[in-house]
Image (cartoon, rainbow, N blue to C red; front, side, top):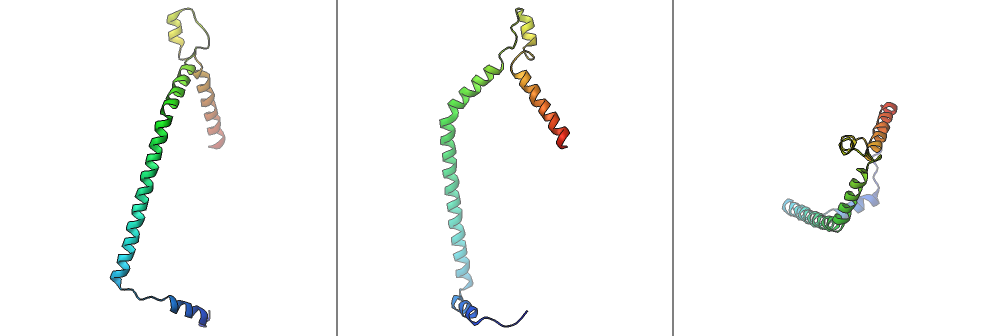
Length: 115
């Protein structure tokens, strides 16, 4: 490595050199940090308000969709005449049971293949 220095680069550094007192420098840095904190707080508040507005607009449609989905999953696969037998077999005799079995099977296969 050489000790030769580029005179143009040294001139640029000499131009940019600025004497600041320690108190002024610290005050400027703290003002900049306070401004960044205020900006972050405002952005968080705006994001929170947008999230609340979206949740308020989507609450009823999502609740209706969840209600229809849960009613659809509890539909019996095979109609049984005996009400007591129908109640006893309802956890196994509905649309959700084959879906749950398929998901458990896929989970088992994934664990066997990738573990």
